[in-house]
Every structure is written in C-alpha cells, then in structure tokens.
Length: 245
Image (cartoon, rainbow, N blue to C red; front, top):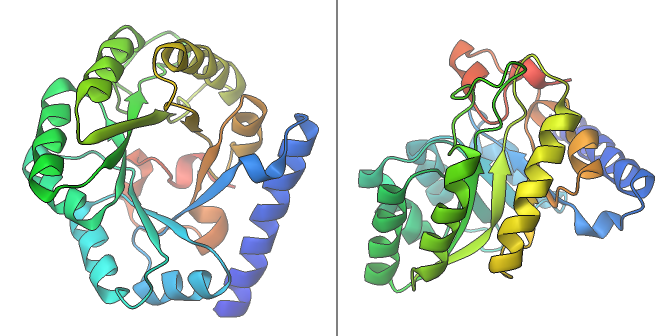
C-alpha cells in the first residue's frame, strides 16, 4: 500500500508541477490537499511519512477521529471540506482545522463564537456555488455568487476568523474551465476588499489542471491518491468519483 501511495503521490505532484508551469506559474504556489475521507488513518500516516502535511476530511466525526489517532504527528494540518453544521463548529475549531465550506451567515457566527471561546484564529474559505450548464444552482453546495461578498465581509469582521479565500467544486455537466474562470473573477473581487483572501481552493483529481490554469492555490485530491471510493454517497462530495480520473 505504501508503495502505491508513494507512486500516486509522485504522479499527482508531477501533474500539479506540469499544470503550474503550463500556466506560467511557480509550482510552489499550488498546495496539495490530500482528501483522506473514508480511508484509514494509517494511509494518512503513510502519506505523512512521504512528506504530505495537509489532509482534508468531509465529515466532522471522521476528522476528529483521525486527528486523535494521529495526534503523535504534530506537523499534520487538517482541513474540513464538507458541509458543516453549526452545532459541530466548536469541535472543528478545537482541532485548529481550516474550514473550506462556509456558505451562510449563521455558520460564520457559530465559528466566530467557537473561535472566541477556544481563543483560536480559524482559517476560513467561503464556498461558492458555481451553478451548472444551464445556470442552475444548488448542485454542489455553497453560497450563490451574489451572496459571497457579504459572507466575506462577515468573516473579515469576525475577530476569531481569518478569510483565506474562496472554495468551489466544478459543476457537473459542464467543462470545468469556464466555471473556474468565473470563480477566479469573483475571487479577485473579494481579494480587493480582503487582502488575506489570497487563496483559491479549487480542482480535484479529474480537473486539477483546469483549476491551476485559473489560479487555484489549493487543489483537493482524493481519488488520484488513495483510489476510487466504494461509497455511493461520496458522489456528492467535494472530491468524489464523478469527477475523478
């Protein structure tokens, strides 16, 4: 398993490097976020031994469980990429995890309260709904683009939160490049008001090249690292089989 993980990690890093160079970018400006959901903690440990530091989970329970199992690895950096309920915000904040899926004002408030209580500074990404080929929304989760500036302002005004940027998943049924171009344009507008929002979390196993070309600084890769997941419910996630390679 470790040999396979090592080869897959090398292949994904090579793809990121090639995509960045093709876009005229420094590959060091793109961070790989390994989406380890549904895979055992020992796989995370194996990738960490190969130099991977940033890992993401889709569910809070799995995030907290793996963080506890791997507490002896202090260099791990945890991220939550799935939808977050307000009553679970405190658990994520206690871990010091970055939250990539902030999509509504009540969640901003819950994270801010938890950050104040835990005396932590929480890195936050506003998730954007990029719509679909006919302009329909609600496919992949996130705030509609018109709501994003207001959410960004709310995060920026919260003392315990730090706006890191935007996150989105390419719509189903549409080439990813146009969607990522819309995301990059929105990110530039948000960044003009919030200088800390310098990151763009976009791109997965099947479309990371298009995301890097559009300026992504974080790519969320699961399938290309760990293999194809067997759970049907993963199809609706921020890194699932539908857009995997």
